[in-house]
Length: 283
Length: 283
Image 1 (tube, each protein chain N blue to C red):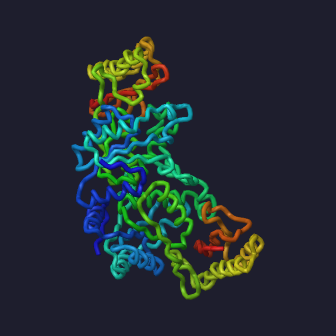
Image 2 (image 1 turned 60 degrees about the horizontal axis):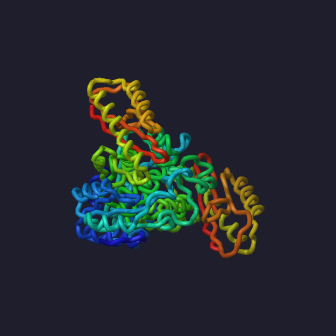
Image 3 (image 1 turned 90 degrees about the horizontal axis):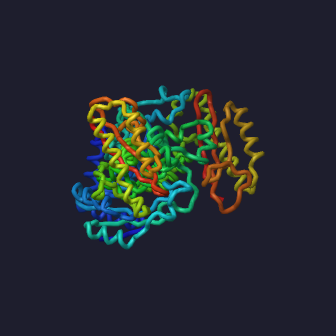
């Protein structure tokens, strides 16, 4: 496994791989790799000859009051994990390499798709992601890129970016990796106290309960969702959202229709830690 | 020479070229090719093994009251000209291929660089160019792309886009091709009446006069520029702008400094025809 921080170095290696006809799958990460990331890397390996991982905590996708400074960083462990998973190249740029020091004159704006869900709670979050991923796609030029279904809004927004910007890249969503008790794996789970960690799977259980009711025929889930939010509050969560969203426009949906795809998604706080989770509903 | 309209077809051909180690220079055009475009193609051939030309009149870079409908279209002549210049591939998409019919959720915004010059007179013009060129860059993935110095603001904005978006493409500005009497070649010259065509070189002569005065020591050219605008009006031009701009920020500059680069640029109307021209000042 080789590690590069400079764009010109990683490009040279990728060109060398491509010139031998190898296909490349790319897994962009912010490090603090856990079993969820490893499952992305494994999915990547199934779809291409070689896997490239980037490790970069992108400041542009953190709001001023968010956890950029505290975000877990563990480069040595991450590199070891990548090596064990058979990753060919790891790209570890710094801020100067990714954003330079010069004036910025371009902004990529997103309409509608970021109005709800995490976009509503985290202004500028998806613009920051799109900014860095567009760069990374142009640097790595992979055949395939793998993202987690856990960040479903990210996946759908990036899929739309690939379409509108004509990136020649196939995006794959890998299933959510979960702890035994159902908690979706996340680098931010490291923030949870023992007590919070015990409560945390409640979000997924609420989603599962709502899913079951919808599959049982509840096509107007508003009251059901409200009730589950009350239950979550009673258990010690602070609610951000719990709702059903359109798979295409990422707008909340009041009345579900058979034959359509939806995202049943929730975001909660436990103390200062924000947890998200979702279930894709194929009705 | 091969011609393709579908993205998947041109990509296949370009991958085949690249797999044999050929480098690719790209010349995006809106067709109506004249000697200016041919000089871009020749510059492209000097810098790479194979040349790819796109011919596409991009609706996104025309304002509602501009000449999109009337813009000259002459595909057959254009293809013949490309063939004669040894172009390997011509990409001729239509609007459906370039923009599809689905909803658009992304916008690329430009700050500062499009406030003056053609950006001021043509709202949305450079956003439209950036939108289509970002797509074309991702479709063609050339090593080099050649643009005309005549559209200097376009060249500088696209250079900045390449930098901020990390496109792995070297941009080259080819010198302005001129008629014997100095008029910068342009597809829009076809709109000029005989009488207008006779007057048209006056814009370049005005720029040359200002350049001479600046090189002679006039470092605050405001009065000089005002006077030349009056002269142009007297000759039958309608002025849009005539000014000296920073090469970096594309903002107007009042006081020139030695050792810096500037753009001395003008835009005028003759009847309904808009003409632009510029001289790069390396002081």
